[in-house]
Image 1: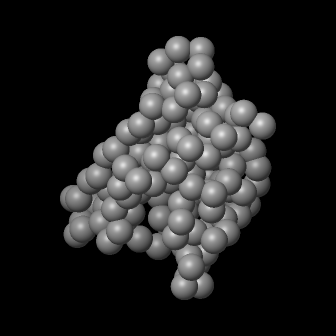
Image 2: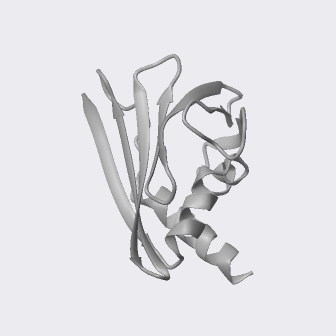
Length: 131
């Protein structure tokens, strides 16, 4: 099993970070490789299906396997061994630690996230808050 875990502190309340990251319309704003994401229902719940399309036109489907408001959001790729877990920790009323954990059941993660992705998330969420 291959695993990648990275985290960042974001200057926004945990609820704002959670709402932003689980909203499929926002995914292309912070993950450069995704041009569009859709959900079978929103707000999401366990069992909701997300699908996204990459810059090269490939669609990937995921199913929500765990969801706890302002705490945890987990997806599993429907036709693969890939999992991703978002963890949220309120550090104060206006500061959140966001942790991104991705893993595969066997083999290697093809394109592991880097801190650059989370830095972009931080910038986008903090800019959105100021508007």
